[in-house]
Length: 178
Ligand code: GDP
Ligand code: MG
Image 1 (tube, protein in one colour):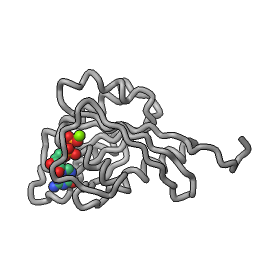
Image 2 (image 1 turned 180 degrees about the horizontal axis):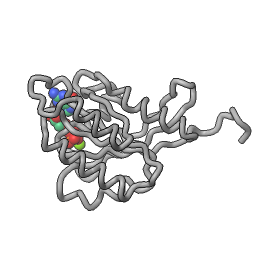
Image 3 (image 1 turned 90 degrees about the vertical axis):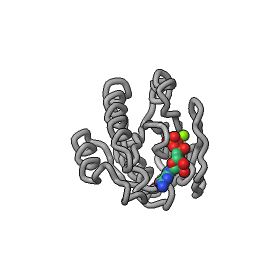
Image 4 (image 1 turned 60 degrees about the vertical axis):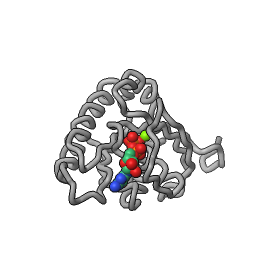
């Protein structure tokens, strides 16, 4: 189609990875529906949502979001979800050092097995739980910088930083010519 022709928007396959309970499903729900679920149900296998957005430069994109389960018994399924992905959000929770260590595992997996062009965002969720913080913001940020990942502290509960994650991913992808 000629430049500027209104075709279907480019599709962005985005996968969420991270330990169970860090808030992956809540982040997606917050972003796509503007809601928060205090009693979020455990994700079985994976869940899918799509969401069309406009980038700041006025390009439209359709996110196809794969929200995975973080439990050990599903680890072997993860490559099915990140295969062919344009982007990944690796999520940990600021109140859990263990979840940050798991995030390191996921980044390593992605760097070994995902497409070389994948855009990775490291997301430090539950930023509202500042009084229970176990992972300093600076530690997350420097880990992200060392691996050329986007970094964002966010809270699915308060909505702080949530849109920034997806907008940052969209901008990096459109900047790369998607
Ligand atoms: P997942 O296993 O990574 O998908 O985690 P969920 O999205 O199911 O969330 C797990 C629990 O953490 C639920 O009880 C949520 O209500 C809670 N939760 C998720 N995001 C936040 C957040 O930003 N702040 C707080 N305080 N709790 C959150
Ligand atoms: Mg979930």
